[in-house]
Image (tube, rainbow, N blue to C red):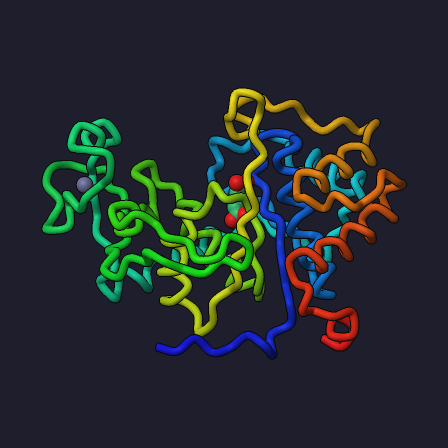
Length: 296
Ligand code: GLU
Ligand code: ZN
């Protein structure tokens, strides 16, 4: 099926943090990149709190994150949505897939899957045996092994990974990020998804869901990951330090350096963000002239 062009769909981007702790440098880079891309396209920039994994969410972390964004001058458009408030919608989306026989129950434990090999290879496709609780998996009949990314170019995903029957509803009853993120991006009219390159595999799965639930497809733009000195992803799990509220300009400038917007000078946050927007446009989308941006 042809994907209708999104030329007439107004640009909408988003930053979608998981509220498991305060933002650190790695998440600032992701927030800044999605913000700059939205501004460079004169588009909207939404913030969504991805608290679908409620056991992982830390009370109050959402407010801390929102304050950090404001402090860094990253002001969002529209209302903030919380995934924890949208379970009814995810239930409905899951039911639709179930009705079309695109799902199946699975009671394999992590341990059992690991014992059989590196990837889940469809053990319960032919029918689940034994007692629950059951996870619900997506019957991945059309793996997406290659897709185009506006920053990374052509991205290839190993067939074994792309073809995994990923989980939509966990054994412990929680909806997964994979399902929630696609339904939210569709419902919010997101056209451009800018996020870290650690989500490339997830993108291949999510394209499957996009094709199912939407007539259109977003542009994907994956930015390189910020790593610590040991080469590990900067993440809350790896105890990356929180942003320092006393060094807003410095950290914004460092994030620009990381994104290779090296011409951006160290100046006050507002000027820095506006110069960084121009630098982003020149680096990634030189064909989008200023004129274009104004008339979009
Ligand atoms: N909530 C995800 C995270 O914090 C981001 C998901 C996304 O941008 O699609 O890693
Ligand atoms: Zn199974």
